[in-house]
Length: 181
Image (tube, rainbow, N blue to C red; front, side, top):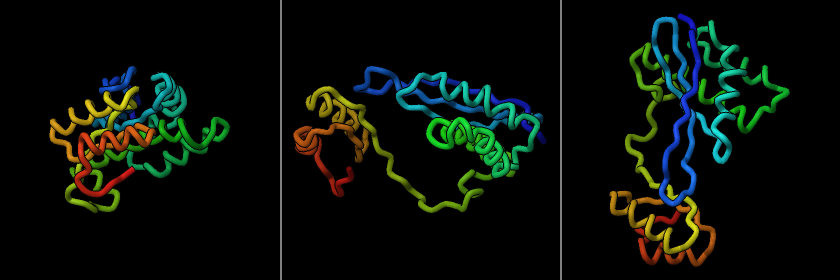
């Protein structure tokens, strides 16, 4: 089995309180047997095309024709080939999208969830949290937080930096337990 194709799909997710949508890139790796693995990569705050260019023009030629089971070797190949580009940040985000897609292919081949392939389940349940966008005013942040509480979220990550905003959010929405910054 070999890797036949790699492509990126740009997805814009509207987030309450943000003027611009949150952008992610899905990375699809397709084998010559028709198995498709999907990974995720993002370059928060930068144009969509940045990750797509790195994957499509730089990483794809390095992995097409290779075995999707050679995850570690392919990671090293992508990493080392790009020493002049830089070995952190955007490059690692792009490589990670390909790597995740390779693990997805392997999981599909052996009919196992990926977490079993990389060490097994650590936690049976993980509480989801809502991540608020950066709001211009404390009142908007409170409104956004209440929206997510009404949806059933019991934990909220917020990005207000002023102490007064934090106090107002805690007063209006509540604290319900441990505080996490």
